[in-house]
Structure formats: C-alpha cells, structure tokens
Amino acid sequence: GPFQHVILFPSAKLAFCGIPKVGITQWEQFLRFYIGAKDYPALPHYKLDRNFFQFDKLEPTAQRRIWEDEEWTWAAFIRNPAERLLSAYLDKVKSKDKFNVNGDLTFEHFVDSISKPYNGTRCNDGKGSIAGLSWCSDPHWRPQVYSCGISERLDRFNFIGDLHNAADQTRELLGHVGLWESHGKHFINGGVQTGRSPWCNIASHPFNHTRHVGFQQKDEVSNSSAAKLVYAHSKGSKGKMEEFYTPELLEKVQEELYADDYKLWKLVDGNGKKISKGRELASRLSGKCPSTQVVWPLP
Image 1: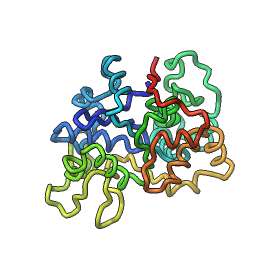
Image 2: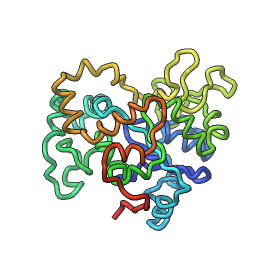
Image 3: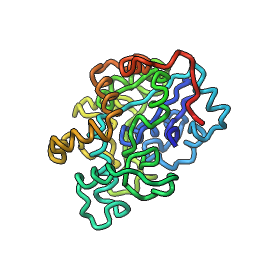
Image 4: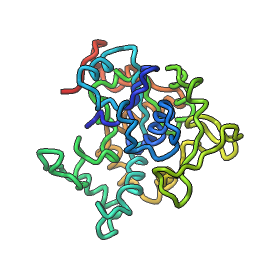
C-alpha cells in the first residue's frame, strides 16, 4: 500500500516516507542503527526488528493519531522521475528474469510497456506485470506522489528533500527532530564485503576512522556520498541519462507518464539546498489548497 514504506522514529516523533529508488535502503539502515541493531550496515530488508517501527504495522487508531498529531514531523525525499525510472530499469528489470525473460527488453520498450493502460480490477490481477502505471504498479517505478499520502495531503509534509541534496538536507532534518547529535553524526557508513551475502556479512569503518562522516554525509576524501554502499543499488543512472533517453522519450516520461512527479520535483529542485515544506509546495502547485485542518487520507 501507499504507506508501506513509512518508518517511525518515536522518540523524535519523525515519520519518514521511504520511496523505493530514492535512498530508502540507507534510511532503513539508519532506523536499525537508531534501535541499536549491531548489524545495521547489513542489507536491512526483511530484518524482523524493523516491524515494530513500520507505520503500516500499527493499528488504524495509532496510525490516525500519528498522522493527525502536529507534533509528528512527516518527511520524504524525492528524485528526478526520469532518473529514478532509469535506475529502476537498470536495477530491477534489465537483468531480472521476472520481467525480462528473453533478456531483450530495452529501456524504450520498458517505457512503452508502462505506458499501456492498466486493465486489472485488483492489484493482484497484474502481479508480475509491468504494464501500466497505477497504484498497483511495482513500487520501484510507481509514481512518487502515490506514496504516503503525498498526492492527497502534500501540505502534511513538513520536509520534502531532493535526493541529490541528501547530505545537507538529511543533516538539517535530523537536526530539526533532535537526531543528528544523538545518532546522525555517529552513524558509521559501511556495506557488505565484496562477493559475500548482503544479509549478514558487513564491512564497516572502525569508530575512529578518519572517513567517518555521519549519516548520508559526503566522504571527505572522495567527495562522493557516503550513502552509496556496496549493495549494487547504485546504478549511476544520473550519468547514463543521455545514453538511454532520446529527447522524445524524456519528454514522454516527464510530461506524460510522471507529470505530477515532475512538477513536484521541479519545485523542490528549484529550492536548491533549502529543504522544501509541503504547504509551500502545495500552494504553488494549486490555487485550491486544502485548509489547515488535518484530514485523514486513508479509507
């Protein structure tokens, strides 16, 4: 569902909307660091200790309370939708037998496939299919605005950041909720040992390592993001845009398939390193913004 990737930091009253292909793995790691997991640099997906801090695992009354309580900070990061789609293709489609049985599904054909109407009446009708964009699409290329109530209540989000400004904006967000000094600055970036299972084998820097820079901060030596861990998640999609996109294909993705994502991202990107607030973005996107009364978007 749309709230399946919301993770909670109760002591800081932070609800973070994780969006696949927008740095969600690193935030899942940070959650496990926050709760004291010793193996937090390992691949976090399917770790059972996460379940206690998953928004969609709570009772509806608890969900409503967290959504309506203005003391809770809701935050999300978004990404250039064309770049995110290419990353999803390279990571989840190009080399996966599930979607690319014959190994010949080009990026252009992939875009054509998701351009087709979704004809299912239930999400399970299209399970394993890449046809169409809907609430039922694979979360790695489902529109970002379909996540966590963004399309219904953008104004509820106190912080909206851009993935490519994650170093500055993550530090600002964690500072705002009181987690930078207690946790963010102490996070030791690591990954899995090359050629080993990503679930248990960890290669992390020692606590006093000179390259220890904190959660999602840039490496002091390489100036690259310390969030890029060795999980084969990083596909360098930003540098491959010209290789895979023609001007016509780029326009189709930005102006047609992901028009709402693109409009939102352009506003966030235009704010530079300044983190965006949902109410300001909503007022710029529409002259008919919701009132300040908090409305619960779930059925």
